[in-house]
Amino acid sequence: MPRSEEEKRRLMEEEDRRLYLPWMTWGEFSALPERQKSRELQKFTQRVTTYLGFWKTCDLSPCRRAKACKGFLTEAQHSGNPRWHDAFPPCVGPNGARHAEALAGMRRLAGVKEDDEPKYDGRPRTEGEEGW
Image 1: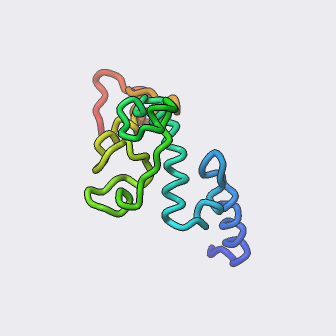
Image 2: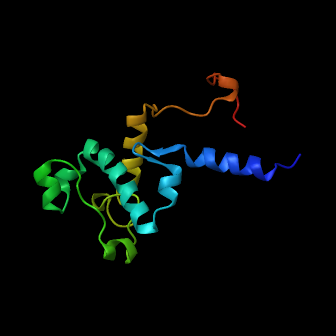
């Protein structure tokens, strides 16, 4: 059965009220221009890169002085070549040099174990059990 216009509007409003970042809802985030979205995502990932200690080898002196990630991508880094990931601060590096390390840190901070794998029917795999 197709949804009514009122139901569609209600679902969209509900989605807009959903928390996207710890300080911002999806509706607030999606209303931002692209460059500001990038900056808000970098604020979030700076916490992860600080936890991982990327500031120790950062090229930016404010990060090293603060002993925390404080940097944001410059306009040249954001749009230039080599491409920098626009959701991560400059300490991650061009072409995602330390991107995998940052993502692994996010998983650790979220409490996801490295050996977690999808399980069929909520059961761990046993020794003679075949994969798909």
